[in-house]
Image (cartoon, rainbow, N blue to C red; front, side, top):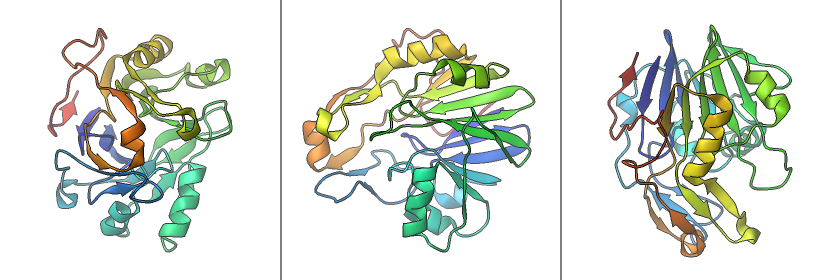
Length: 250
């Protein structure tokens, strides 16, 4: 297993055996939701430069929002590794990067994609209106990474879909982030949400993601109520603190 942060927010490089995946790469510029007056954010800590990312067998995009589905990063990466995305992110990339071929990640309760020798699928929440935050599962030979950058709560049929897997790493947020209901309500469920997800999955390790205190302007952050975690006192026995871009390998 190989895990490396690519920024201090929600971009990762994940390896199972010899296979390497990029998750939600946002490595250049800012992210804008709709219009900059509404929400624009920048990394507080510079991400790993693109030329230092190294080998990548596939790119996985978990959400259609620009801090996950960052077209400029994908454009600068150029042709090479195949890009797989959830349906809404695939549609967005078709508009913003029409020359980029993007394949759709299937739902774990229906089928799994074979990507570079690994099984990959998404899990989606029950509700059908925004905001919809997906989780991704990457598995090989019974070992899996569960990536839920906005938290997640599995329904019984979803638990059955991943019950055969050993969750080696759960990557999820510890930040509690709430907007007015008209803008989405609860965005990140915080440490309590991570604890409940861990109770469902029983991971061997937990890494936090989507917790960077980014520079921001616009309406969203003026209205947001945010509680960032104390990473020294998470209360999660499986938590593994990773404060820099040094890879974890085991």
